[in-house]
Length: 216
Image (cartoon, rainbow, N blue to C red; front, side):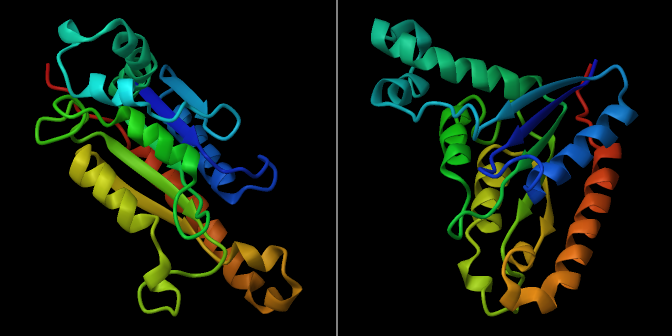
């Protein structure tokens, strides 16, 4: 049985969030292609994971047999998050741009699941898992635009997800979301609609082929 891990992190409600709408498109397409599959869902905005503590951090760097009682208790929630991640045959992450970077709730989740010698590094237990990141932003931060140097979403997540966790990562991007709310940007509304529609199409396409190969 295949498993999809679906994460959302937008603070916006489901009916107004572009990233949530696109991750839902991915999820529906994936479930249609894997009718017997399982979906693990986490809404990191509605139910944030705890920020990593000194005991939880230290426990992730040492042999469980050497953990103090405090370290063992602090690491238990991290272990649950890691095990969810390791179960996944495909991952979709909603990562809207908040103040030029990812939401703090998503950063907290990443801090918890990055465990050197297990999920992080050359022999990561996650290596090769197909991962789709859906990111939305108020304007365009594409290469060559005036705002390109302020994109700390794709470059950061590429480093963490690809180079640290060894995931097979692709991005789906929806831009110009501010055009929906700012009358001064009304001329950009067609660009937003085009970008949004393209994001839904790309998400559905990626979902159909998203499954991790596990050696027998």
